[in-house]
Length: 592
Image (tube, rainbow, N blue to C red; front, side, top):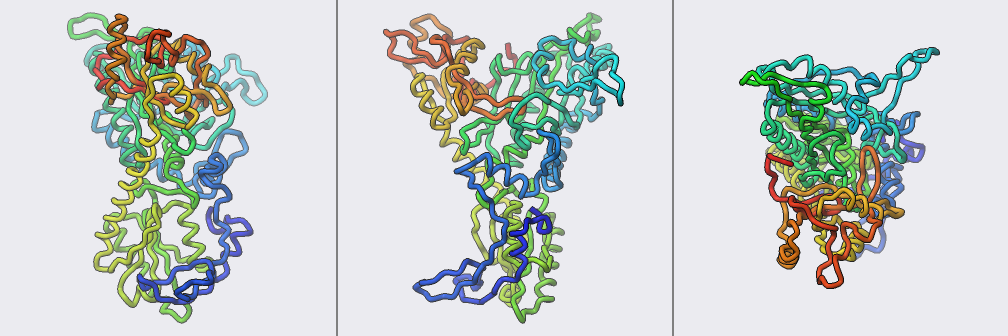
């Protein structure tokens, strides 16, 4: 929360705090709450209430904590229409960093930006039956112009396949017109759902959506995975969030598409998976519906192969959920609009102007080195209030400059991620700050990955599956990839927390136990593959899974069999599924 927007309790923090010097191992005394009975007998300062602390703790009430963090951390403001939010500059700057990276990368791939209208005619929207059925509950319609009823309702795009593809048909005539590779940065509207969540599930959100057409399936398959790798990089290299790359089940794939690949994140505090971004091969289904044909090099008429792919502002919500703590946001340096905040700490009778000049010089040196640094010279807030304010906003590194720092020609740096403090000589300022920012970025990813990995559990029986799900685990289990079995798991696991559902079949697959392999060979059944399942957050819906039928995904095979399977029968593809994510062998570009 910005200082001048703080509530009345925050005003108390505007009073100057009592500053007393006391020797410390670092030669610097910090503001702390008054303590008594210290064996050392050191005097402690009284730190006055700032009013900036969060009311809820992440581990105790995650939902309320998240709502408080996104508002008080100045990421969003609530709007007067449910499910719609104002993205404040602190959030938009993060989106712009990701946009700059992704836009440059797709341009290297010869993908060009464009923009198509927000509105879709009902006739065009309903042209692809499976596609519109998948989105029908979420489509918002314009039915009036002023006081007049429209002769034909107009839809607001939930996605742009049906908006763009009539024009692909117009623009593509021969093989020389291919590939056609377009991307647009825009907003979309998906209306029908309950329990909106900022960034995670909103009625309007920002995204990029790519739509491409190729002469061959091989070209389309290659692009699907190239784009998916860019999405992995956004999450892991920029947001410091570990993800699992994999392929969606038939039940979970994009409506009307051939197959869907995905990067899946996981929030340990809730035990829920989050679909991070998707890259779809649409096959030739849309080409058939919209008559996107071309004359190939042999002079023969052929249909194009198409892809679509997108990531959204949900990325920001995932980052907040994974890294945030009880003090507020924790931003990875690569996406923070302010990587370093410099705060003057002028004690009474100190050389205040000298401290301010040192702050200016520090920011100038860091800016010239390409580090995004600012100083906080506001004189109506105490240093302690400023510490809490910038911690709440998640700035990766805080630099403090007081009288002793000025005398010793140094600064004190405090990390946001772990509160570690270090005194840095001015001569080494730039190099050490760069190293610290790099270390913070890597440390955030490493810690998040350790927490995520600790939640992954491999299971082979329904009993183990149910137990792991109750413990908020990400479950990796043998999976047959059958739609009716997946629905059954969803029915059987449904409860107050939602139901379990497959996230994906991971490209990196663990080995199946020999006992399972041998049993399937004896029964002349196709091999299994590991898949990941769990409860999850969705943009369009929120539901965990449960099987209802006795012959379900994770059902016991037969009384004579010593092994309990988490499937009804397996397919030839074979993959492990874990809490909504499947593990499958490294992908062949030729998906069936």
